[in-house]
Image (cartoon, rainbow, N blue to C red; front, side):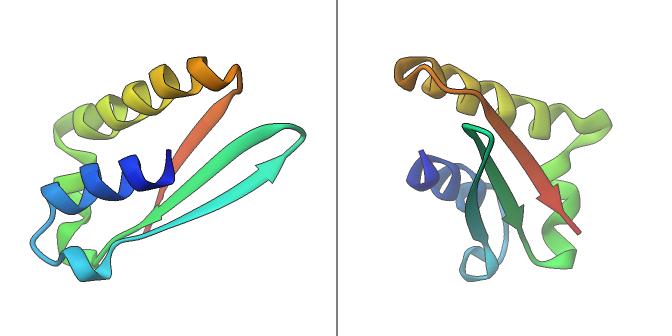
Amino acid sequence: MRDMLLFLTRSLVEDPDAVEVEELEEDGDLIFEITVNQDDLGRVIGKGGRVANAIRTVAKAAAVKEKRRVLVDILD
């Protein structure tokens, strides 16, 4: 799932080498923290958060297969 988030995020930004996805586990939930270049933050969040919500939806759909809860945070 981490690789999927890396692929999605890197395809959206101008500086794909700056994308980092950190995977944490807390109380059985998977938490993915995405960090991008400051200039690319708007591309990843999108107007009204639409792109960020789409990324979260894809991650949650993939988590159903593993029967886990997933949270995706985009860090400044």
